[in-house]
Length: 390
Ligand code: SAH
Ligand code: SF4
Image 1 (cartoon, protein in one colour):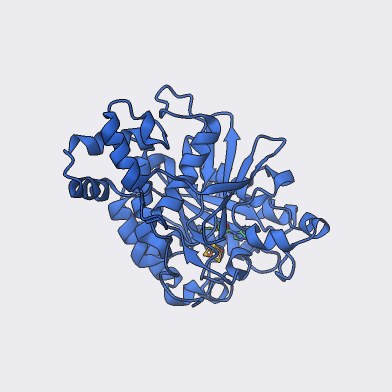
Image 2 (image 1 turned 135 degrees about the vertical axis):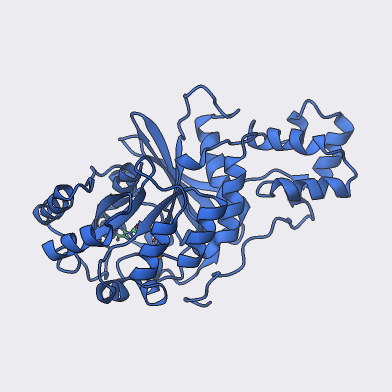
């Protein structure tokens, strides 16, 4: 499989071996088209949509406003299915992680990180990633494929199942208040499926998440940043990690395709960014690579005029990465320079370490590792990142 291709590969099909179509992940238009084939009236689309995405049901028989013969007819043609959860872990600090197993044997992780005033769900967009950022474990995974809209939207639904959060709470009691696309994969290399899934998640008659509560993290796929801004306009997080093309070219190969100048311009152009709705810039602290005072000053200069928050991420080491995390003192000096220039740059407390809760980075790799090796892979950074993004 290509490691550099744009859209990584196929996504799973909505049609099962028994010929029935899974309704989860279909857009409203697609659902309408399916019902049209059965000559069902339009209002049935809305009813079934609400059952699936507002009430979270998985069985046509529970759809009490549909007559029994219709429920049976639907069950002959369709299913409402989510992928299997093959592992479910809970950290002492409340962080939860689910490992999802797909029909083709692939797996991805979804992580939930609770905080006093919110609960953030970190979801994956691909199995692996075709980009090969040098510091990222996901980028070393050989097998890559796009997740289907069903597989993306199901991550939200499964966590809603776990919290019993159906029908969609409207009273502020939600455990899942925010979604971050920061798990495995580059969401803008699977833009169509991510967009479709996010439209479902945002639909006010279903899961009903506001675009202001959704953050998409990208390594900087400039053309799709524009498209995403226009069509979804969710919050944007950009994995910057370096302030010169020389360093960024070296650690993030995508920079050769979309260099810093273009990336920063795309950030400036991103619609509806203001002081109340800033772009998050993620910056992984790599010892001796990107963590000098000069780098910090370069960062201030680069982001001048962009409503920005900076998320300083302690590098999360993995065997063979060849990098080390910057020393804590270096990180705080770096943060001080940013703060002096009026840029907020929190370095947050790690969470969920005991269950290896950093989205995606270990996944299939982790299964092959012995326990002693796993201990080396402290997976703190994600929780820290997520906390800082929100
Ligand atoms: N592909 C997207 C989103 C997934 S990665 C992106 O790159 O933005 C989520 C974040 O984790 C990114 O900011 C990524 O750069 C960061 N990351 C990857 N490997 C890391 C590591 N070893 N330590 C700390 N952060 C890492
Ligand atoms: Fe892919 Fe993001 Fe990892 Fe880079 S940092 S390899 S884009 S998941």
